[in-house]
Image (cartoon, rainbow, N blue to C red):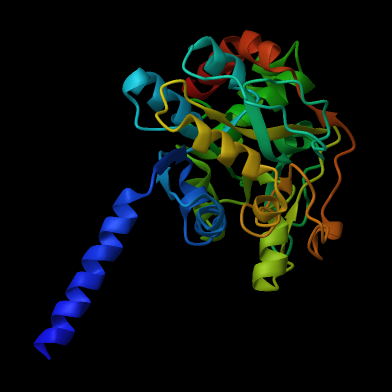
Length: 332
């Protein structure tokens, strides 16, 4: 028995030593990405099968918080990659001087824009939308004006644009749809806002618990309920102004001590091994459609009448003005 115990102990030590010998790639990402139901566990397993490394996914709040954290940590950051900011933040990220150029440009993408960014690579995309329970909400708003004029008891939950990429996306949605009167739209919408959460997970949780009639999310969010829960009671409202697009990206830090491994992970992001995980875990459109196509159920999702998006540089130019309009309206 002692020999067996000794052998088991030596084996465990050998396994631990082997794990410690592996290079570690640290990726800061948003909370829902690393959740049990998010893409993180499957992505980690799939990449580690190719890299002989230890992929460590670190939850760092919601999307916009990722950039704030690495800016605060600077060159001392332990992150090799951040994954989960979007094109509304990439100009600001590049201006920080913390990010390295891509080792090669991603190709054959299914992102509905020409991809020319040489610092960040896309991994998924989607459209922002207000999601509701179609068994409870009968007079569904079909525009921001409809939302403003809806029954006074109708309440929505949105996210803070200073910490959340969906919250920032809503700012851009209103600003691009109403460039000359975004402040008026926010002032009129203010009575409809039940609360503003720090991130998407908190807001969506409140909606599912019945605390609000609608929540800012994505046109693809109903696919989760339909496919994972066989629940067709959740829908996305189609707005006549069109819907703002989000393209989520990842980038490599200049300070990384694993540059080649970081490049390998960013290349892996557009492989079928990564992209096939996205539709039914992150519930977004993949940057490159999987070889087997999109899962059954995605064909039921609404298609925006117009796709709205601004360039990363324009997003940076209008961000402060849009944020000031939002803060003024909600502080009244």
